[in-house]
Length: 115
Image 1: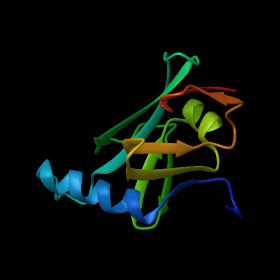
Image 2: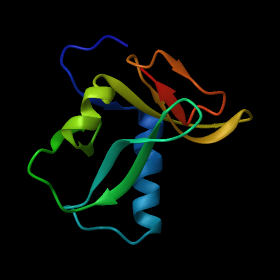
Image 3: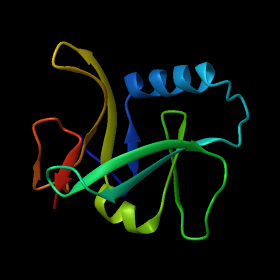
């Protein structure tokens, strides 16, 4: 993936799944967005966290890609810069995953990483 700016990117498959989950949870308010963060934990040291939210915080970084509004705190963004959020329904596991160019290693489950 070639990037022209520091952002968080969302693939078409991830966009479709985010829309589906919002619909299933009855979220049709346009003030809601996808909050992505990095928290300590997991077998590689850091893990990704995703939630739907509608409250912005003062140091939030806000991005919109492929029709999905993504918000992250500044500290998490330092780990997530130019990361792509994707979704897979493959045989090797179903769910969201991050293609993070900043990760020096990831665990086998793909849910944690190290820098």
